[in-house]
Amino acid sequence: MLELGTPLQHGAISSINRVFKSAMSEQLGDKHHNPMPEQARLYQRWAEGQVGICVSGNVMIDRSALGEPGNVVLDDHSDLDAFRQWTSAADRQGSQLWIQLNHPGKQIPAALAKVPLAPSAIPLGRGLEKSFNTPRAMTEAEIRATINDFANAAKLAKQVGFKGVQIHGAHGYLVSQFLSPRHNQRQDQWGGNAENRMRFVVEVYHAIRAAVGDDFPVGIKLNSADFMKDGFDESESMAVLTTLDNAGIDLIEISGGTYESPSMMGANQRQSTIDREAYFLEYAEQARKQVRCTLVVTGGFRSSKAMNAALQSGATDMIGLGRPLSLYPDLAKLAIADAGFIADVGNPTTGVKGVDRAAMLSITWYEAQLRRIGRGKLPKPNLSGWYAVFDTFGRLGKHAFVKRRG
Ligand SMILES: Cc1cc2nc3c(=O)[nH]c(=O)nc-3n(C[C@H](O)[C@H](O)[C@H](O)COP(=O)(O)O)c2cc1C
Image 1: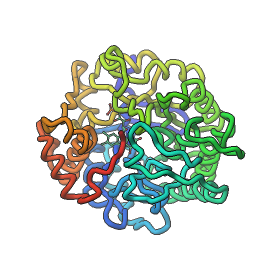
Image 2: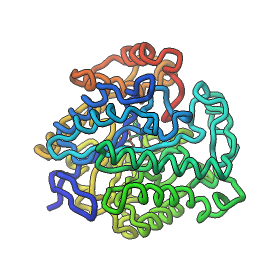
Image 3: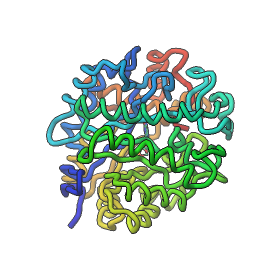
Image 4: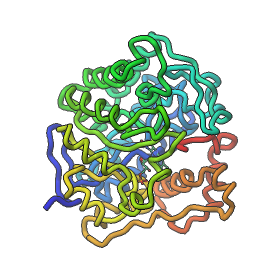
């Protein structure tokens, strides 16, 4: 019977088990945006915990376009030795470290870019207008250069020892902005109908494939939908999945939502969906009928029971996990050994709702846990909300509470 502990071998994808660590931005880049030693220690810990495939937090492909102040960047100016230390620390117990490559497009906090680039000059809505500046529409040359940056970062990633590459095509960043009819209103070959809006991601995929070769695993994290009126919806998402599958992509991770509508973190989900744990499983069931590549569903999983049930339903090949792995670095071992395992992901709060919101505690509290692990400490399930507020402020100063990830 297919279970969390069952190894996976499918085309270029292999894994010691079905546990897939989904990207969580660690913000452990130094002032030159190279990974710090804490980053290596954090991933060594997950590898020792026998995560099958471990995807890095989003690594930026262009240092003039950061999604967060502490991002890691992989480009021709990066210190490749620092990246090699990271990948070699994570190369343990058969666990594999992949890199997630991202360009934020217009989801760059206002303090980090006066005029961000995006498919069209359309600002973010839903109260985010003050936190993010109105973007400028990219020129054809800028689009081509960005596709090149993705491919160059993928080539460097392979060179420094990552075992796979994941395109961040979800959560409202640049790739997802191109896909969205709401955010991409271009009249040229990169916008308008669904086929044109898909062109950017397809070209990014082909450029990465050409850079890393046929045998190197390439995947994407894609939204099932943006959950916005006039946004990218399930039928368009299904068309993108099918196109990338036909083009030869190895793995598709399904998520959903954007900064404007953060469904990936459980917002807007029905209680019955939250109780069932997997936010996007119904969509994955449909996707499974359309694609041959490895599928991963991420968002909401907490118990071995729900993880094994999702695997046995056939809708997904691996279980994507974010927050639970920030509190249980040994989750893979624990959940494989114990069919009754349930991860408690806490309820981070300072006790003052306004502070929780302003400090984005639903993100920064988990980042604080990642930093603890990176410093060689244990995660702390009862970590005070105020600790996360001061820790983030101490590290990032005035940039601490720039809006990110909804
Ligand atoms: C601190 C934090 C950072 C995150 N950073 C990223 C990221 O860099 N890239 C990404 O695709 N998703 C990111 N996510 C979203 C997670 O990958 C995942 O989709 C989400 O947390 C839902 O899964 P979960 O319920 O298992 O936590 C982040 C989530 C958290 C909590």
